[in-house]
Length: 223
Image (cartoon, rainbow, N blue to C red; front, side):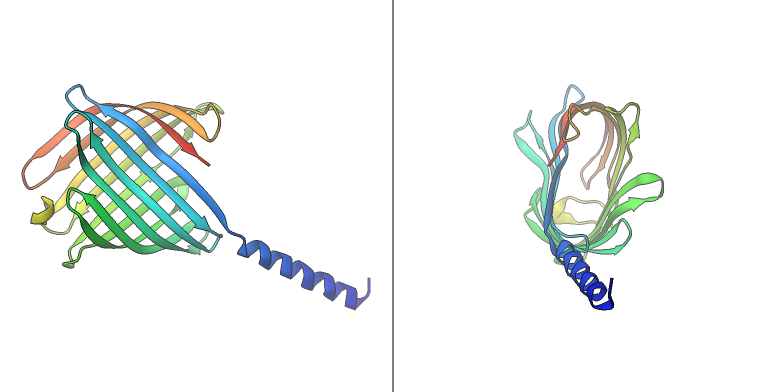
């Protein structure tokens, strides 16, 4: 092969690779669509995410919240719009805004990191800065243990914190909510997996402190 042909092939391969890098992909995942109860409490919870982009740049939509079926009210509900930039293998830096719909209708700035830590621990962290400059934070950790090719045990931990009391949101400084749970799911298909589990939840507000152990049934899906 002469040098001209070799340079042509290298240039063509480079253009193809560049085109592949510029291709847009999208991914939707409902990590939690579930019913949670301890007898006295009946909650419907969701935790969904959707992104569109490429390996380096993504636009994310995230929503998390719960609805109390026995009371007919939302306990917490928010929507995040984030720009995500890949900064290292398996790690993205994210920045954007959050719209909280419940318990108060507010806007927060968001700065966070999302990725895969050593030992395959999934990490989703965010700092929320309110319109008054107050700071809140959320850290979610997840792990998957394959019992069989279809049966998966998934521990999950989430903690929400606040730097100071927020009277308009009923938020107390310190740990405002902590949730630790186990979910056992069966992947009928990789994209569709019903699950059962247990959650231990502690909630701290300016008005009260609550803690309870709850049974969980739900479904995880993605496409």
